[in-house]
Amino acid sequence: MKLAPVSELPDDVRKLALNVQQGYQFAVANPDVLKQLPCYCGCGSMDHDSNYSCYVSDEAGGKVVFDSHATGCSICVDITHDAMRGLATGKTVAQIKTEVDATYSQYGPSNMDH
Image 1: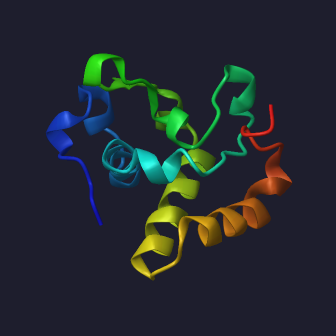
Image 2: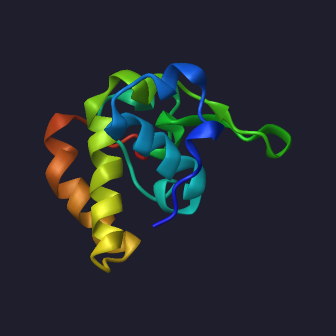
């Protein structure tokens, strides 16, 4: 599984719990995966449109601009770790999305539906 180097993360993220750092590392290295997965923490009201946007707000000129939202949101990070585990066990992104929808829809609307 691809993870971006810790050195690519902002200093404030490098000081956080390992699972949060790994969420950011995974997002940077796997935008194609997280852009297909929703988040259910209510971040659609912040114009987030996927789990990826909880970590990255822009990719201006090939440079990643980080969003700090996931630094304090366990739902965002949990969804990312579910994706990481799913990929590690051979699941497709579509299968992971179905599981994410089933597990997290109880917390609120999908940010892909706004």
